[in-house]
Image 1: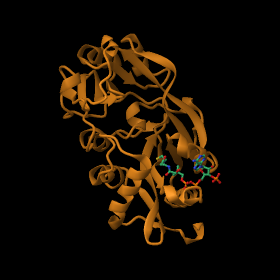
Image 2: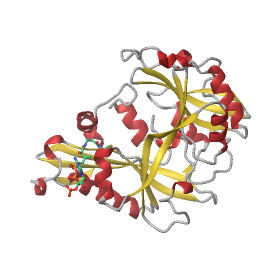
Image 3: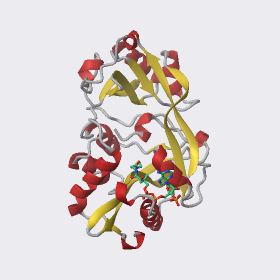
Length: 317
Ligand SMILES: CC(C)(COP(=O)(O)OP(=O)(O)OC[C@H]1O[C@@H](n2cnc3c(N)ncnc32)[C@H](O)[C@@H]1OP(=O)(O)O)[C@@H](O)C(=O)NCCC(=O)NCCS
């Protein structure tokens, strides 16, 4: 059966079939809708370039899809690392375990490699992680989270509630009109944050609504969310030389059931958030980081200590 499956580059006219397949295989949530707008934001309008996209076709039907977003990380030495991030992948339920995901992924890797990509990184779910491990991916480790619960958690969760908007959960927030990449010197691999990136990542996201608190010394980028009927306020990123200013502003203005963030051990943002009452929750991982180097790199990318990630680096919401 697998012999009849052909792999070819994605074409614009495949969009409807691909969105149907992603919806069928992965489902959708209010923030992660399988819409042309979200697809375009992710795969066509990304400032690092158009994604590598392949489809698998059988009997004229799209039965598999594979996308790898282009990305650029900057290392602690200031050097840029050209990356791809395998994100959306799906095989039609009637065609699974026939090697389609493997063929799509290996072919996309070859394209990435021939374009000078040095590193592949992603945070796969448990369905695909097993497959990546058989194709040379290495598990780096969990991306742990910090949480600050509020007394509102004692109330019943409301699973019927709508996703909150910034004004519902944040007092004194400002719109995203001043996204200057004022970030401290990075301690490890992190996204190259320039103004174009920040505008795309936060201001132009088709479904997630971001807001800012703090001032020029320390600013937090916040995203309200609903998880299992709980109103969470995601601290997606922190900018500025004084993260304590940002952390205190979040605490003062947040009206959510809980705050959640992820900054790595040893970073000033993490220290500031811990001082503001956010606690690491052992065993609770947001996501698990996997890598596959495509060439020699001056960092040990398989060690978490080589990375300096915020939630905005790993989530695509
Ligand atoms: C994950 C998914 C893309 C795999 O597609 P597939 O075409 O069936 O995968 P392949 O046949 O190429 O499998 C390659 C390897 O992945 C692993 N694998 C795939 N499906 C697996 C499963 N259900 N359980 C355990 N391992 C699995 C195996 O190691 C497999 O190699 P093997 O068959 O030689 O043992 C498919 O199950 C899917 O669409 N799932 C829902 C969507 C999803 O979760 N996507 C990933 C997140 S973006």
